[in-house]
Length: 136
Image (cartoon, rainbow, N blue to C red):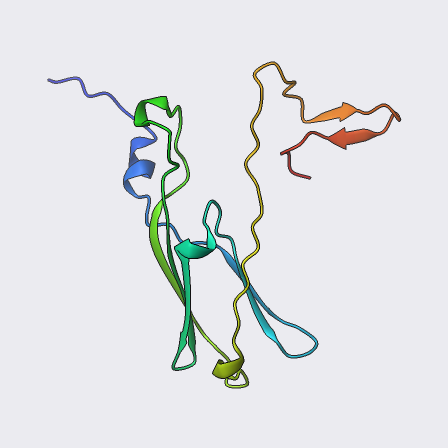
């Protein structure tokens, strides 16, 4: 009988699907429909927004970081590749007035190895504050 090495996380990696960016859709008091999409590490040129037949479509591709060789990665958990998201617009939306806005937000932080890893620390005023990058 052959010995087979068990990899408990191997099944998760095999079932990982394509990247689908998260979105929030809401209506303002002025009856504008707002669609916000999380598109990390993407530039304006990487994203295409179209409106056709009362359907808004977001298309793009998140690429692997440039300048980093495969052997330099210690872990890759984020998904990369092309995506398409389509949303049916309410009939109250005038397709001619649809606009898109791009806001660049920097989320990656470079950390030194010598930096403390505690999630909270006392500041000089004696108040507790969260370390950069931790969740509240």
